[in-house]
Image (cartoon, rainbow, N blue to C red):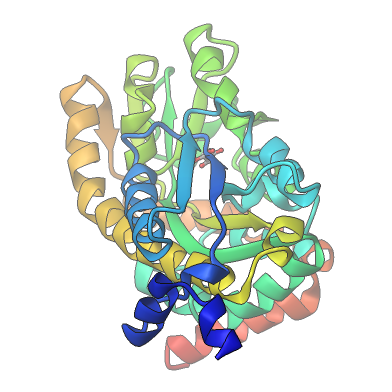
Length: 335
Ligand code: TK8
């Protein structure tokens, strides 16, 4: 009788309806940051995740999202998560290789052949394996979202052959695998945080950058870049990261709610990202960008030029990690 008396009517009703017991949910505000604009598909994912959290928490939780690097870049935000001063970030994995070198496996050029392969690896055993490493670094990856296949833009000339890359001053993420990939292609590559890219392109401090079509569109790079090439040289994921120390202070019900709602956000975000990709490509062309496809023969030469990056970086990433990835891909491909 005593236990029952302690339970509120809401708790009893919630338990009866199979909803989380609200007694296990405290009032909280989740600060979430991101580098992209709210119009990017990450905006749709965050909206879906927030609606899910709002509903499952019975209105006790609020997600407060900041866009366009307003709270700092991916890496700074991720460090704030590790020290427990910020709850959440949707970040590219690439700038985090200094924290967890194994993440570099996703940066290897031409790793995934298509989005289905990426989903199978990220949502399967390999994704869990990586998440365990992140947890040891104080980061809970709630789900893998999509950044996507990356393409080169520049302000100098149409890039249609291996030779066309020569000498371009291209911004890469803060990541040695991307740096070496673009050096191998003959460019003059410079690592830079995403928030500085637009201005660097505008002032012509750099000539080029690479990102998926949806980012080129929603970050308005078409205003400062005349040429776009379908290089598709890498697929990078987004991580929906939560602060390890803060996550560990939450109840089981709250932790599960976060995982469930981040997966709801992931499904929405991936589906909008894929639906919008072609629309974004059309948008940037309508805005004046000249688009170049690259012939199969040239793509073969480009792949050949960057092949050495695998052997060079396997020891830093972890040879076991690279081998595990390659063996899982072989299985997926029926080899
Ligand atoms: C946004 C970044 C961005 C990434 C990059 O914060 O840095 O080029 O592709 O989308 O994570």
